[in-house]
Image 1 (cartoon, rainbow, N blue to C red):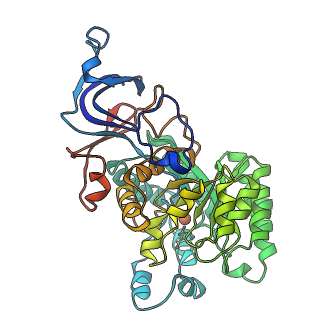
Image 2: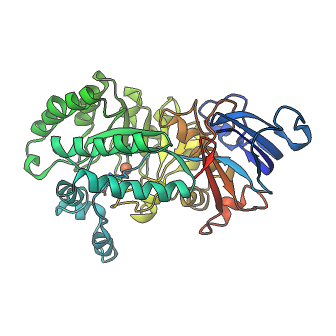
Image 3: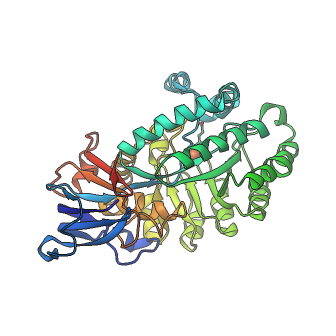
Length: 412
Ligand code: NIG
Ligand code: FE
């Protein structure tokens, strides 16, 4: 697709080159006011101030008058569990009546509940549901997404989930990355045979995944009552041996040690981080591992929010993602994630937008393709309704300020 887009009120996150942003850099959000942007073959071909728009070269391109919309790179949601078989609002009501997330999990609810439902759902039905969720998220501005397995917990069902993700990847125009999360919970039959389940992951699931090329990343739920640090390391190393880079669920419910392990393994990201101490913050800050914060999960489980300020001030690379899943974040709305990050974690609007675009893109291996207005990157763009300033986006939480979404230069 080719186009000339004119009269953009704010062109947001304009960068000559890009890299993951850490510390004080995160608050630098370069904005070009009253701008034009040229799309060439679905990519960003040129941009500049309207006053400098050259007369000749773009005269024959299809014209899109943005009419005062602001234009941002699409959200890059680097942590979701988009494929699941059923919602779990009955557990939501249990939680309202006093049960904790851990207590629900211990009595066979939670992830195991989702695994039972997924086992009984066909690949086609799972695909259909996940596809419909993705269409909604794209209309809300998500232009790249990572999706995890982890509600299978058997060879057959984990592969079924990963094949659904592959079908989504083949059909959707947005970049999709797959993470293998077979180590999401121990199935009941392996509750007292952890070694048995880990062997199943390593000896049967991983070779099948490698054979079909079904995943880019390996994820483990490193948490008390789930996978220990030693178990997480064993599984991650086996994944790394077949070329999967770790992205770990760490420090959600407790000081699990998952952050330090992730850093020592060179994980692409460690995600959640509700429960952090100084050692974990320092370990992350001294590394290239991205700390992915999932504030809607903290919100939904009524947990303390992630210490975003401490992490940023210590110099960590921080990204934001939705964690869309039926148990702890039944919403994949990245606009809400950005608002909540400002309201509850005191991130500045510029920091939250960078963390949900550019750093999110790096947290799913797409930083050179997406996440900023940079020549050659994909034209996956959000067109807002008219807004007075960029801070208005997180400020006016709850209003849908997305007017149109462009993927590879075409409106969806
Ligand atoms: O990221 N914490 C582990 N996994 C998911 C929740 C899974 C579920 O409850 O279904 C999360 O929050
Ligand atoms: Fe998650």
